[in-house]
Amino acid sequence: MAELFHTFPHLENDHIIIRKMAEGDVDDLIEITHNPNVYQHIPPFLYRKSRGNLLAAIRNLGGRDFDKKKLIIAGIYLCEEPDKLIGLAEMFDYKKRMNQITIGYRINESYWHRGIATDTVKLMVEYLSNEMGIQTLKAFVMPENIFSEKALIKNGFIKESDSVQEKNWGGKETVDLNVFTYAVQ
Image (cartoon, rainbow, N blue to C red; front, side, top):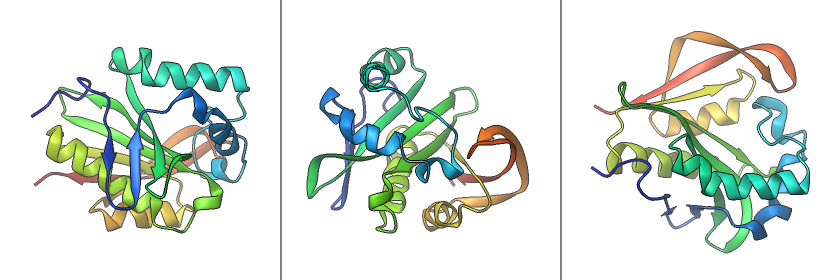
């Protein structure tokens, strides 16, 4: 098995590409991060940051943060529009001893309901479990975000019976989140 932070992932299927973002993606990232509808069910990571801050984030996410083995935040692109950033694929909170990682995603509202979240989860599951050998993947979802739940379930995630409380999701002070787990058999 390959080491998770050895090489920044480049994943693709017939529909989408997940890869390192480039500075030229900043305008597309602004479109995503300045849309309150995108952030109604997720944490405020990058929400309404300035152009300069988003440029720095693109550089840091593909460089410093990856090199420090903190997280992988990659861009999502359609195969038919390979230069248009349409979302973020997130792999973070890696617990090497537990062989566990958390995944997430955020998609430009103009691209909702096109199966992109489902394809993104599928590519992340294949990469993390098959190529990296990670045994457990977690995802956290606000209960009203039924489309995100469906994308996870379609990819073999199971909803746990217990929920967790988090702060500052969807602009709310405290929220209960459903926990989904994918465990390699």
